[in-house]
Length: 607
Image (cartoon, rainbow, N blue to C red; front, side, top):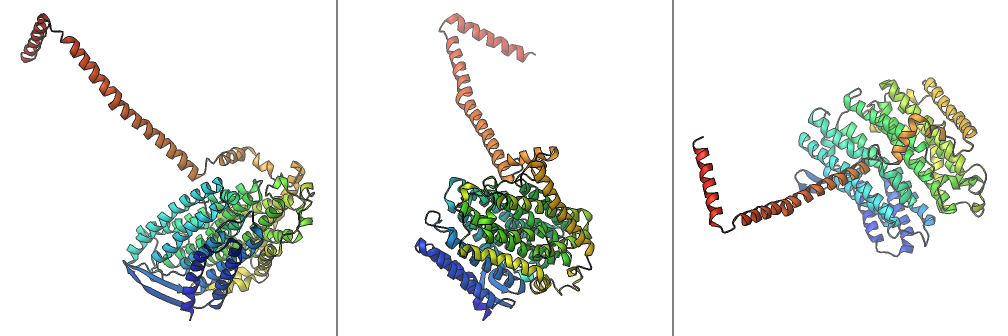
């Protein structure tokens, strides 16, 4: 019976998405809601079960094999739930004047392709669905119809596409070394060529998750793409799929060893992503751009946890994957509610909204303290597991995680103060609370953040502990009393962020400007300016480099044309004119040339 559900989970949303392309626009939202609910119900029916489905072999080791087990069933259920919440949210977010024609269709297609990539038990079959998501990514970003959105869609397509090419090469090399493309049959040590294959596959996984340096399209999409896209695709779907595949690479396809060079590489990448992205989030003045940089920063914690190759770190990274999807989607939903009611996400134009939008403010507050790592919310417990593992692997990684938490809390204090607190603006006197279909998803996600905090031990054991072969030998790191020192340090860091915010407000005059002193701090200011000019954006660097190379090639081409069209013809013309003048027709002149030629011949002959 479960094998029938496997086909349904993949084909039903794809077929529904294709069907939605042709139905009237006014029905698309309800159709997407019903279709996503059907897939969500099916995912719950098979949750925790095991099954496999073989639809046949194409050749060259490529087979349409699907496998359902504990981890994949959890990811499918989570993705289906976020799709359903996004479809419900869109019912009120979009209106007659702001209703992308095919957004709901692409939403369903993304669900089908994601389920296919998660359930596929063959690397090439997985790659097929993975690349389908690349096309959907382009389509979803460009749905707003603006020229800026199209350029951002191109940027995302190029960046993710290049990383996918690396993953293709990694799949080919892995299949060659393992002698098979079936995921359950591959188990390599990441050494030599296998180490190169490991790195190539990791590039594809972390790019999908939105880690540095493959992140630069996300802040642009936050401004240019429809907001529900940000709540669904970068905040939830890509994190779940990218980190899922990263964990499969490190646990199943390869055996990542704690303390190895590749482990240190992953942890370093995670730490760098945490620090650099949160420092960018800290100084943003737009609600959506600030959240987009945090979506990038939080990936760093997941990569850091999994990169430790320690059970506590891996479980922490996977738990943080889910927690991030929960509170990050909730935060983007609150941003959409604010944008819907006020017409802007510019923090300088907001303020005092907690009086007008109390439920939105409460949802924001819960998600904000969750992402900041405040107990007893879910983000606190997943971060504590990562702290535990990071400290065991090296103090530098632990400090990087703590610094990230400090600035995360500081930036959300700034965001909450600027958008929801303070004085209400006259132009927003007609602002009202978001509609129920927008409130239900954000309130539900906020409540889950609380539940997964209170019942964190149950969530970890139910969802993530079985991912590790043999499970965890103990649950000592789930106990406050055992790691009381780490807990106290975390609380002191969060208290420090709060005091820093109060001082910043007093120095700079408002919550929005509470961290401006960091932006203007001499060692950081020039780096911030360079970042704003996109000097560190690999895509922009490649574009500028490409333009300079093309300009150089154009100049070389013009020079070659000049040599053949002007220089050579000019020399030939000049030579021929000179010869013509020398042939005057006088006998004496020809006699002189003949004698001169004879003299030169004799000169060289008797030299």
